[in-house]
Image (tube, rainbow, N blue to C red; front, side, top):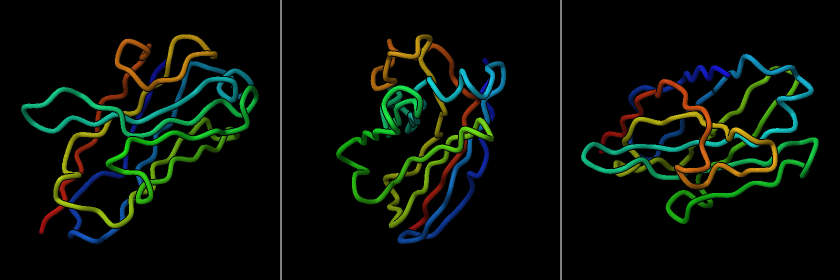
Length: 130
């Protein structure tokens, strides 16, 4: 499975940005069964959970968020395009990080902990200036 993230860049505090991640190596039917998620890494810190979404086929797109982004970020998916999105609103300078698209190795797993991650995307830089 390969994950290709895009959409990062520079934005002013209070602004919005949308990240996209296309998964390849799984059929559309298989993709719809797997959870997808986003992690981020601030320089000097470990990678941390941001958001996750269950597989449509199993759990009807249930979503999960870290406390730091809840109410500001929205994760969604388009199974026809094998794509997961992260809409980021009301961005803060502390959201500056490299954002990684992730998916677990098994469809029943949820990618909320690093040990649950089977595949990582290459990362995309998000910089929020004050």
